[in-house]
Amino acid sequence: VTGPRGTLTRDFRHLNIEITQEGANILRVRKWFGIRKELAAIRTVCSHIVNMIKGVTKGFRYKMRSVYAHFPINITLQEKGEVIE
Image (cartoon, rainbow, N blue to C red; front, side, top):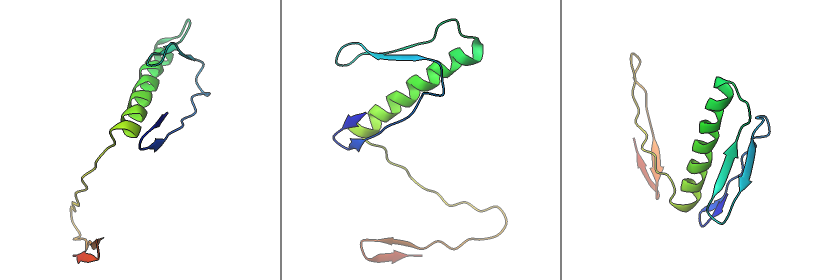
């Protein structure tokens, strides 16, 4: 998948499925005579592809939280030359 934010590749050869491109914006994922777990993998593949497209076009943003249960932890962040402790 290629977009304005870069290029992503993923290998789905370990699954016995057909992935074909039908048109500019249509991607078809097929599985013939699959059992229940193999058919569930199709939805996973489709979700991975959608997330890859979303990542190279819109991008993702993560917020990290630090949580401790028993022992306190020390965190140091450095952003634009400033150090936050």
